Length: 255
Image (tube, rainbow, N blue to C red; front, side, top):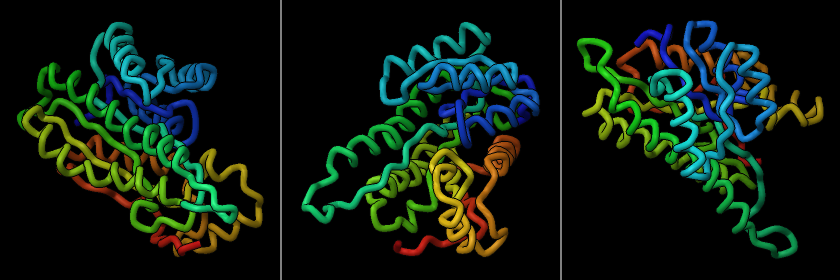
């Protein structure tokens, strides 16, 4: 599927991987809806890429439905490209040193990362299924979700985050199989250690230590490299139902 002239819907588009993806897809000719809870952030990125800023909370069904309605109305079509980048990465032990439990944090991370992704995927699939096919394969669109290498290599304190990303990875194949009837592909990118809001606040020595564990290239990933992976998935119809680790061969240690 070509990117040019198609509507793209990017959640978490106001920062990090989502912002880089929105800008990259725009340069490739897509008409981009920058979807984020932060109105100012969404507007700033949309201004950069000539897109549409849409305020939405992925944990709220009505908000997601409203976002799709707005995009269809204002951009003239349901999106054919949907990229789920919205997520949070808070860490906590199951039981901390004082005996406190992290149940509330676990529930919040699952709600944002896993349920939020599934909610957007669901509304996207319904909207895409109504679009005409694009080619002889019968393709209508592609949905790209974001997991993390933590779904396989989760560190201590990452039980909630790893579980949420593991859920995203696990739904990839069955979702792709189900939506194949409508010509909709589903794939997941599992980034390693990237330059995002989750890492930019760390001290330089901690960032250097993280980078030193990456075999090659020995640095944190650039958000644009995630965006290039999105481009590859969109343009290659055989990428479907799979999880792509984008990690420089890193394997996270327990701590």
